[in-house]
Length: 481
Ligand code: NAD
Ligand code: 6OD
Image 1: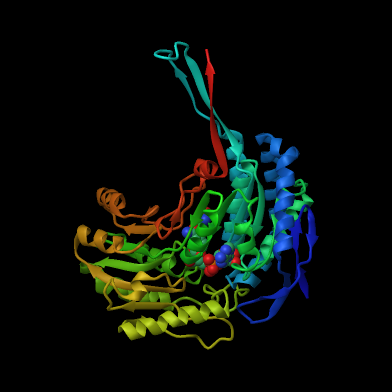
Image 2: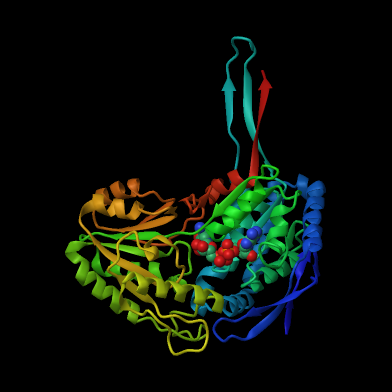
């Protein structure tokens, strides 16, 4: 049985207790994971602090960029192992793990290496006058924050961890990272890559475990952690924010979503059906950006819903290692229980089940992709994030109603708009209160663009210089002339 260890100061170390890593497609235990107790987390933070106090704290962007390119090379060289680990941990179809997780894991390190080289500061010539007769040049410099805690979810393990670790390292920080207890495997491989490509000891540390009362809670409570980058549930974000208040430490939060798709009658019909199906059911609906509310202009509502149901019924549900499979299980039995709880909620609220609504005849944490209709926006399944392969469809009349329905939520992560009218797309995009709007597409990512949400969906933006704004401190120098 594989044993996944913590990685501290350049060495793999055991923890006190061990917990099991389970493949959700088969229920098999695939590894034992060493849980980091308070002492181990303290050792990880101390190793990171020592790196910041040593050479790493004085490192130059060029050296960091080269190191990150070696990390990207290291991921690519072991791509097959990363893919196998991600599929076994998450149950995601193998082709998706190849195209998304592992490709993005390496791409994140390359993209932020390039940004480390390119990122500059600002400068201003300030005329003299008043009480300061001499003029000055003001310029800004960036400095790392120090020790960054990176706490990650289970849905896109390597993608979300590298999305935090890469910019944090690019800015010269040392990192203590924690993958989700559900998906610890690729983070452990990443630590092996870090060791093999010569990342200095203590610059990247990995701890395994759970949240409150375990590694996650010990990380956020640690007084030597200077900043916290967290992706996960909104309720967890609230708990972490209470910890971060001690010491007034900055947080970057990527939290839940309840994302709308707005389909206008003038859309490219086939593209919209395929796009909405993909945005709702990709990765079994376990992407924070997934659509769970579909609003369709009344003129095409019946036709659209019929086509959407056909598209959903065409998913091939099964073994993630079979290349014919287009939908795997949910990430765990625990999560399946939660999602099936929402199937009950929908039933109780009187939802019409257009397809799905149950489980397939398969062992493993599978549920059927499900389309609901017939509820109003105030229903729980239209207000709470399910995080499974589900969506609810509803007709609307006109732009104003579409915008009002889309905005009737406390979340504000993403929206997609399907229309051929560019002016309408821009008008609606300007009014939906989300951090990311896609027009006639979904989850098309340019790593330089701002990424994040508002309301219950998070705090701050990452991506490109927005990541640099979080992971570094900008200082102004005023030089008298
Ligand atoms: P989660 O909040 O349960 O757990 C996320 C991580 O936080 C895990 O590593 C967990 O161990 C840790 N954790 C839990 N409680 C903690 C605590 N009190 N202190 C410190 N750490 C703690 O989330 P999840 O179930 O793993 O992920 C699914 C959620 O993540 C969904 O809500 C989804 O929308 C969200 N998500 C958001 C984004 C985004 O970019 N907005 C991206 C991915 C996932
Ligand atoms: O694409 C990204 O950079 C990103 N952070 C995606 C997150 C998806 C949420 O599940």
